[in-house]
Amino acid sequence: MEKVLDEVERRRALSPALVQPFMRAIMEAQYPAPGRTISIKTFLPGSGTEVMELCRPPDSRLEHVDFECLFSCLGLRLLLRVFGSLLLERRVIFTADKLSTLSQCCHAVVALLYPFVWQHTYIPVLPSAMLDIVCTPTPFIVGLLSASLPQLSELPLEEVLVVDLENNRFLRQLDDEDSILPFKLQSALENVLERRRELTAGLLVSPDSGHLSSVVSECFVRFFVELVGHYPLFITGEREDGYSSSSSSSPASCSFQRDGFRKAIPSKTVRRFLEVFMETQMFGCFVQERERGLFEVRVQEYLDSIRENEHRRVNRFLLTLGKDGADDLIAYFSQTDSSKTTSCFFSPLPPGNKMKFLSKK
Image (cartoon, rainbow, N blue to C red):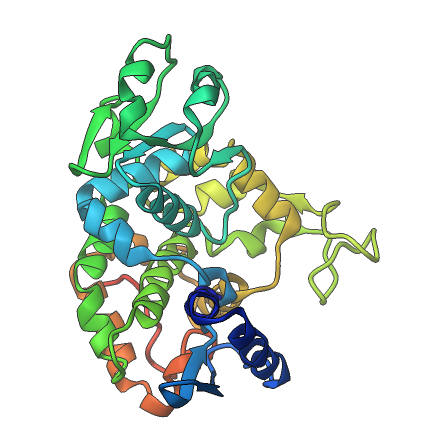
């Protein structure tokens, strides 16, 4: 969409009459499937016939999401601290000099939460006239221009994390951000993300922002699969189609065995994290709604791998997370047929390659 709007603006600057033929060509073209590209031919005086290629992201969740901007503003260690804070639904303020930086980084950090959805106040760019909003005791994600920082310092803030996107630092914190995420899971995720460009190169395609975003998103999806991927085993009252046996239209009446879900984890640190995370609105809505999407595909693959070893504990791999997890991911991507790279994130995993953040003992 941004590419189309840029072209419309370019043509409008030359002559408003040039916009209509271009938009007609867009409307007559077939809407591309996820991951596919269409070519639009139009005539421009002075330049002749031009061809514009428009690629629809493999995952519509990632449309208009720029992870590259987020990674350029925040180091991995700092980013994962922010990520952990958001999982606990804390109050987070991002500051930057430019509106575009605020908007892009806020959208990107929210996209990292998938399959969970932020349930609270979300204002990527907060006008200075509405600054009092940050005094609310409820969770929020807010973007604030750096010029408003002097005003912010005068407000009676509750516990809040203030992230300076311009200088890769925290201006204010709670001092426990390092210990929110389970250490082994965080280390494995950090290691994989450090090699995100290597993973993208393994796709045998140009490492553009679209493919990079898909790789980054997949890494966080795998993180959540390892963390909560066993949850369907603890939902009762469902039919084979995944809905409640007592309701023909909604899964909301299903019963979730919270204690069993948490205790199935062999790692004490992960259990402690889940005990807090399960109290968030994000987790509650996730269990109730259970949208069928990429995450459910990955969860099913994960559960299938568990059934191959039924006598082992549910998340038996959590104790062995480590450096080799990135090697597993790279091996998977590098073995993927280059002709299928646009859909590799939606395809079943090849036999013998579980694509997990794991090192085998």
